[in-house]
Amino acid sequence: AGNNNTLTGNTCQGNYGSGIYLSSDSSATVVAGNTCQGNTDDGIFVISSINNTVTGNTCQGNGDSGISIIGASDNCIVAGNTCQGNTEDGIYLASDNNTVTGNSCSGNTEHGIFLTTSHNNTVVGNSCNGNDSGNTGAYDGISLSGSDGNLVLGNMCRANDRWGIMVDADSDFNKVSNNYTEGNTAGSIRVNNANCNRNQIEFNTVEEGAPGNVGTETRSYGNYDPSVNLFVGDVGYSRFGGGSLARVPSHSVVN
Image 1 (tube, rainbow, N blue to C red):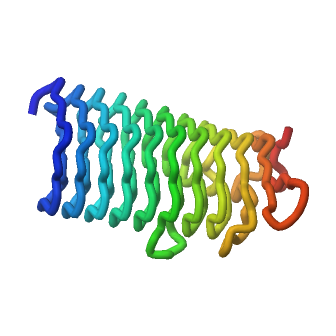
Image 2 (tube, helix red, strand yellow):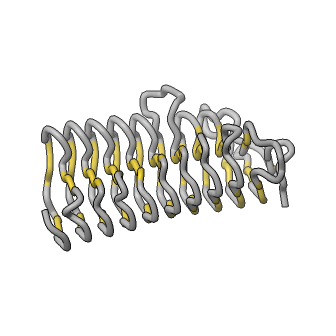
């Protein structure tokens, strides 16, 4: 408890509950270089606690998510963590104005990184590979649900069992830019649901030819009005042929 603490170099393993738990009386805390594995809940759980830094931790094999930031835990930095093989998401975010950067989220049963009711966050330079490890076809590398005004920039999403990046369920005014996707089962980037408005999808790169890759084009379902969602300069490259291709949804704006 208390503010301005540092938790570093701990091994939190096999606990009933979360490995590390920060609540409302634990703001401005640095959680760095810990190993949280095999706990029944999250590896690291932050609730109603602002201005924290969660960096360089390994969170694997936990019963819920690797790292959860929820309940108005705003203005946190989640950087350089490894979240692998967790039963739910690698990183679960339900808070605003956070930065999620340089994390590796792989082999989680659900999403690599999941934003729900999360606004004005920056998700940049993360690697989200091989998520939806149970092959349910229900989870993505990076997924936004009911989340507005987020920047998803420069991430790598490979071999996830649904989409590389999904913008879903009443998510508006998001920018998805300069990401690299390869070999995701359903495809690269999807803007879904008729209530997703004013999203900008631009300058993303799709690498084709990975085994099991189906439909690697950028797609938008539900919003075909070019004034609603904007697609700019997305490009795909084929491993098994020369040249390049740009695949974009019908009735979208392409520059």
